[in-house]
Length: 102
Image (cartoon, rainbow, N blue to C red; front, side, top):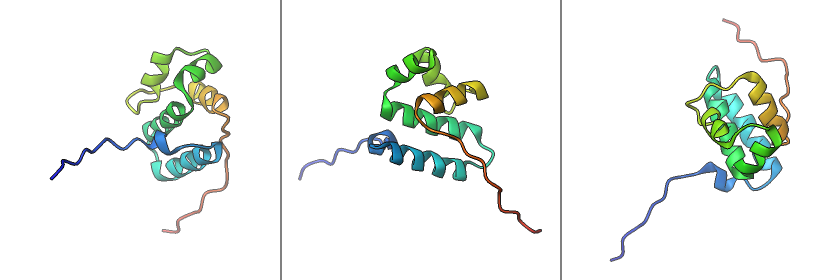
């Protein structure tokens, strides 16, 4: 009987279109709550799907800096987040949050 080979799940491999990437980011923002690192990591996943080298050129930031900032371990500035989302062709939107009567 043959052995089964498993590989680590990588969401980036499943983000094929710009719409996939936008929906993924939207879902991650909804899931993240106050966890900014979760959102940064989601942007890192999208960046890997699009190509980190191109993102580095488009933002003017170094690849290594981007990997660190978007790893979920870094703490990127909001200016970096804005540069990255713009370079990825994504926009952040605001809407009125549901209120929770308590």
